[in-house]
Image 1: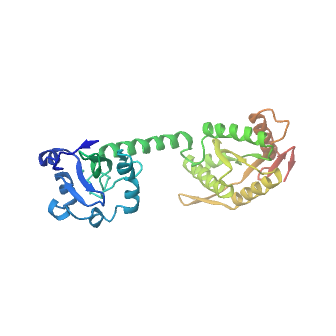
Image 2: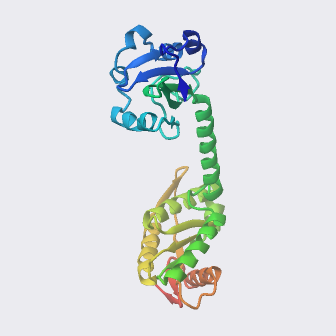
Image 3: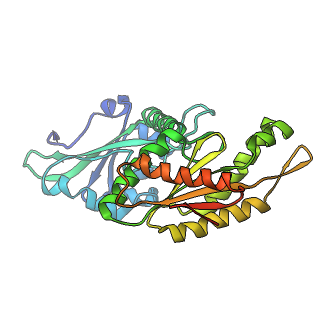
Length: 319
């Protein structure tokens, strides 16, 4: 806490030399002090604002919120802090950073503390407004970079689906959860029929485009709660959560049918392809997540061995 002298004055030199905004307010939020920092950034000179309500000049400030926020200053003689992570700014000042700066406003930390008179009463309080734009932008940039790195470590760059490493991490969790809750879930493995022929005939760029188009198709056919990933090359793995194999077969048939009708255009050529799929519902006899996935892979192998462009279910039946 800061105590005022008998006249309640603050040195004008002190007010104007500090690289922070200083605002002195009374209990009714009438301005009694306004330093050079505040004048420079608001373009409001002291004589125009002193004696008037702060809220008249700054409509962006939520009056009800600020009055409630400042209660501890008067009731407990305790300082109050407002940080930019909670509220980006109190005063909507423009950013004075270079044109290349992405901030259009000044990020602020604000400290409000009581000004205690010699009699011990609190009739005024002071706001210190700090420009923390550089720190805020640095943290935002770092957070964004971390998010991008996290995404890059999880997402397959070609398809936008989970990559194999992250998919298997999530798969292991899905397996344990399904076992614990004793809910039906079905694993699906699928790949593109005769994919080598696509690459050999049209080139690897065309092959990549086919993989991308199939990935987009898979995304449309599964739910957000399902787990879809590129397992490797032209092979994909999907866990259909809370789905019996009968329900999963409907999804498998939809993917097969839509893939069969899909035409991929590449450099003036039209490419058509089909997919084969294998399904396996989790059962009590599955001793591990990979044992479960292996059953779906066995069903996929059966589909390819018995004609392709179909799905098979383990225990092995074909459709």
